[in-house]
Amino acid sequence: MMEQASRQHRPDPLPGSAASGRPWRWLPVVLLLGLVGLGFALGLQDQLSLPALIEHRDTIRGWVDSHLLLALAAFALVYVTVVALSIPAAAALSLAGGFLFGWVVSAPVTTLAATAGAAIVFEIVKTSFGAALAERSGPFLRRLSQGFSENAFSLLLFLRLTPVFPFWAVNAVAGLSRIPLRTFLAATVIGIIPGSIAFALIGAGLDGVINDQLMAFQVCAQENGAANCHLSLSPAMLISPELLWGLSALGLVALLPTLLRVWKRYRT
Image (tube, rainbow, N blue to C red; front, side, top):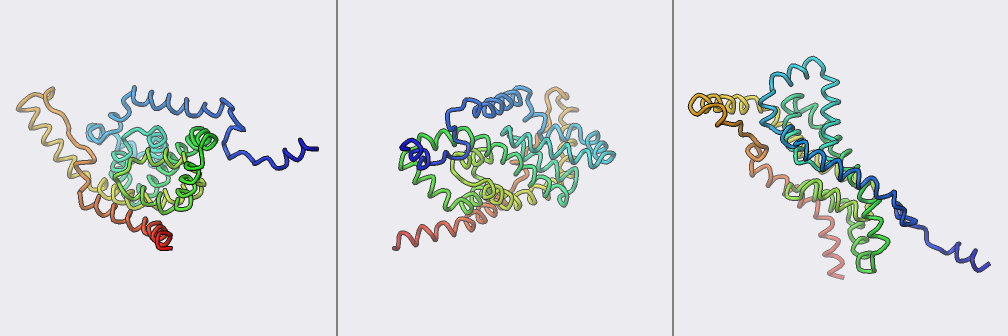
């Protein structure tokens, strides 16, 4: 009887918590880390760069024009993979998407693909590191996690809108908390829409920039030899400080509800 009563009053395990210590919950983490290492070893960040796009522009564009739907699906799949593996090529891909498909098509595709990749990282971290942390956390960490969860949407929206915070880091930190997946998805989708549109618009106007880079390369090759010249183009060269300040301002607006709640608590 006492055993039955204790079973009835025993608290349910946290979702993903290893009712504990099941070693298989670490398998997705090991697999993800292995794929991240493989991606960097293969140099995917260099193959998915703007100089690579310039070098193969005509070939890529011809294939896209001939196989539009297949090219769009391949682009979305590559984008999901890049975000899930935290390879620093998402900005270049966002610009390339605008260049290849136009901003009207590219912006929603990159938004959904980035969200899908982020959700993969979020779920893997949540069901492994997050669960382990929850099992071993003391009262302070529980209160901290609860406070973050209460303001999860506005905090995540702020982190997504503000370009200072690395995308992959936000995915991992969110996974360590007890934020519901639906809140994570909603804040991510809404938060990256402005940046997705801005990057796609910049990418749609890349033709002139690419022509300038090719011309500069040809001049350099004639004067110094092709071996001593290289194509130089990165997202940082195309993103204006005004755009970054504008996105940061949107992030601060998203943070206002949380700041107001904190202020009211302090006042009372």
